[in-house]
Image (cartoon, rainbow, N blue to C red; front, side, top):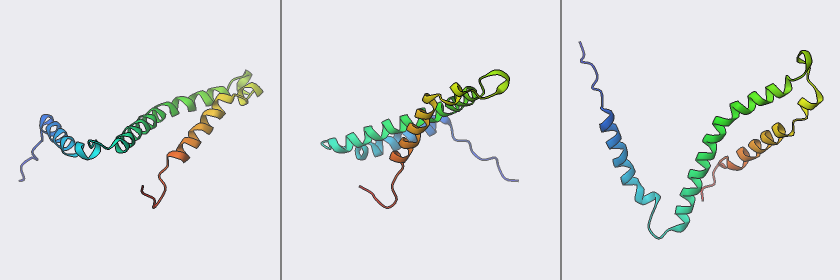
Amino acid sequence: MTPPPKETSTRQSAADAWRTIRTLLPYLWPKGSAELKARVVTALLFLLAAKLCNVYVPMLYKRAVDSLSQGAGGHVTAAATADWRVEVSFGGGFMAEKVMRPRGGRHS
């Protein structure tokens, strides 16, 4: 019979994570390299924007479906199909995805 696997404590895992971050921090935030610092900040802002989009998209879909199902008896009305905010939101999300998608083979 094999012994049960050892469980690593949460405290030990957190300590390991902070140790790794401290080891990598000089490479991510070097002294005297403003360009690299700007890239790190930009990358973190894009990461935050992506997280916000992932949270907002289901709510946007709900609003789109609700706006299309307005009207008497479930019939689609002209006002529901002409909701420009939904179109602009989808178009903006599509363009943002195209701009932020990494290009294959190019590393700068």
